[in-house]
Image (cartoon, rainbow, N blue to C red; front, side, top):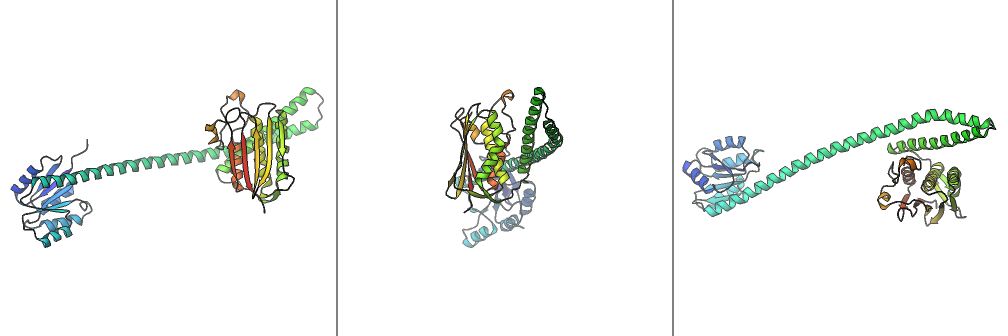
Length: 384
């Protein structure tokens, strides 16, 4: 329950205090009475006051002196003061009162209606001030909580990045000897068909695992801002050939038709050839994984003024509109159960977006909806 506001009444005559208290009895406020300026200061040290009604003419410390002391103290500086005086309407006296910090002057005999209406205004202002202060405190608490949550999320994100980096390195360690062993087995020219099949399985799956590990290491570098590119003048057609070389086995294994269109006129970029090939390869792999067996994939390269446009389109599963808005976030994949997962960790497109931005380019994803295929468009600046 909110405490009532307090009104301080200061007058050296008891009957005046009683009369003021009677006139203010209709207000929802607690009344504090003081017979002198010193008494008033003692009360102000203990209570938070919404309004002070102060008699000007008092023995010892008069109303003006009390007002000046109140204005000079942080605790009471904002307390509105209304002077109550029985003197004549002396303009010099009124101006002195305002200089002392008064907000208004009332002259005796007091008009009950005027007094009541003015006090009501200051009570309303006080309640509004208190409500505003309450909301400010609530906002400060909310901001502090938000900051705490943000700090916790940053710490969790940092631990996630550290875990990804550690996981990638730990997986890479046993992977190298497995790949070496698979290569040795291939050179042994085994004639048994079953052993040949086993060799192919090991070779294919270690290659897949190697790509997953590299994706993990790349995404951890991206999240920590440690991924770097080495820019040099390159021919885009050569980059496309490099990407196709690494992607064709997956596309052929899924019996997709791949339609490639690259202009005869050279398109030169300033970029990292290996990373750009990885960019295009990731887009093609993504299209291959989410296109049913026997589908079609289009890779088109064109030049649009000062930019090269690379488009990878498929007639595969497509994407819902809700997925398009965060398709480039890490670990994002379309809905599917584990038994029909297409492979991968949902990192490929996040890596693509980062590589595009490192080359001062931009990327967009488009799909008409589930079952209607997807299209990814990448714009990269070309050399003059």
